[in-house]
Amino acid sequence: MRLGDVARILEAEVLIGEDKLDLQVEAGCGCDLISDLLAFTKERMLVLTGLVSPQIIRAAEMVDLAAIVFVRGKRPTPDIIDMSRELGLPIMCTHYPLYESAGLLFAAGLPGWRDWPQAVGGAQDAP
Amino acid sequence: MRLEYHVTGRDFQAAGEAAAKIKRTLRQIGIDAETARRVGIVAYEAEMNIVIHAYCGIVGIDILPQRVNIYADDEGPGISDIALAMQVGYSTAPEDIREMGFGAGLGLPNMKRYSDELEVTSQVGSGTSIRAVINLPAKEEG
Picture 1: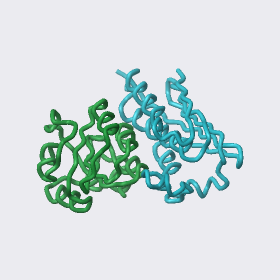
Picture 2: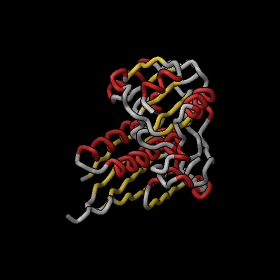
Picture 3: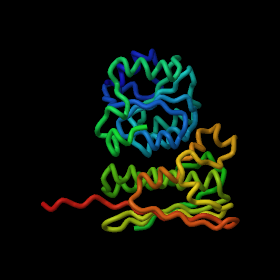
Picture 4: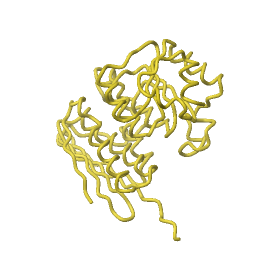
């Protein structure tokens, strides 16, 4: 799925990455804990989160995530936006809650880790 | 080649910078993306352990021809039961730290998951040492 499709489906405001809307995301994950993000995501994945913290961007950099979507209308602080700009990591905000955001993207065809065979350890390693 | 960074306990502003520098350096010197990612995650979890639980410490890596050794040594309260700390979901992170998105009880399990070898030693009241090894992928003979 294109990042631009993610933004359209979630009626999201793109804060960083307007120039990367053609980027393909392979799978999605919803999480509010940093170590969950590190354990259960892989490069080119999209993460939906309600955690507004600079650490979410640091963790995203470690994993080479494709993009971050902040849910429930949460807005990242200026330091988070600056970090994302520096890294070239697309971030967006949606008013939908986590459950509905994930449901909308899943229904539109964006798989979770379980259906993504490239994930570390394959499907049996999925959360 | 060795990279080493000082880490200060409870400094959440700088937290993660050492791991980020380590990962960027690995990519700059031509280490493959998958290895850099694994080293980055292990170094990040080791660094956050120091920030969350210890007073201060160091995180570093040695880049060798066939592997990357990651080390972290801290001055802190230590871990009384390492086997328990290795269990998924077990965490002693205080409430204010959990609110920042930490304390999933996955720090040491994540280090184990992404490294080829992991050794944790600790002395209660003194500190904790972590040694992890990540093997570099075998170069294909052309």
